[in-house]
Amino acid sequence: MKGAIVYKPDSKDLAKEVAEFVNSNGFQAEIVEFDKDLERYDFIIVIGGDGTILRVLQSVKNCPPIFAVNTGRVGLLTHCEPHEYKSVLIEALSNFEVEEFMRLCCVVDDRELLALNEFAILCSTPAKLVEMNVYVDDVKVESLRCDGMLISTPVGSTAYALSTGGPIIDPYLNSILIVPVAPFKLGWKPWVVRDDRIVRLEFDRSVFIVADGQSKIEHEESVEIRKSNYPARFFRISDRLRKTVEKLKKIC
View 1 (spheres, rainbow, N blue to C red):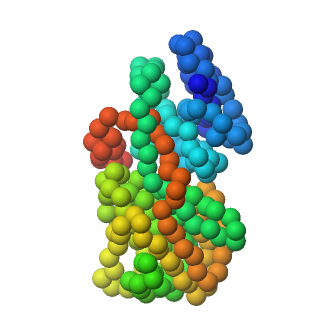
View 2 (tube, one colour):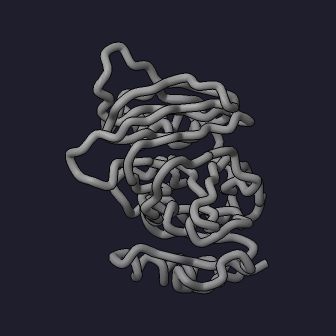
């Protein structure tokens, strides 16, 4: 087995330390660039925060399992802090227990976008409202004017969707979350639908479709979003839900 190590720019020294540690303990890993073909590796070690992980996931479709050492600000998706990585990483590589989390996908202009957290569909003209019709399996469930709409996974419910008033969803619950951004409508409520539903949005002006804050495409008319056949894969974290709650309490 051979792993890739990727890092955020200010974590190069720690990445070198992790590489030396992994290779000296009977495993193989090398430091690589983000544009490297990461899918050919057996695992990926990320030295960074949630943003670095999301950037990695934008570059892989068939995702090798990810282990992340947090050098960012939040680290909800990470496994450990820098001071504790040695014992946690060796245990993860030795046991190689992997868990999967759903990603969403949409096809825009023949390009397939994937998102672990959310797709943000936002008006491309700043300070302008966009009229949106929301369909779930061709059933119209909402029509409103807003700055945009978030289509989120359970993992993403603690990200952008949380700041716009959406609920926190158990990351192991199979569902899709629909949350408007700054709706001009009294009494709006988020929608939580089954993960095999297809969400279609129609809009009356040009929008940006943003995947996990990383990839952005300008588009018009409508877009469909559904569960991807390519989940994100992570080394298992025991009691992930409890640790997520603890981190949220520290930052919220």
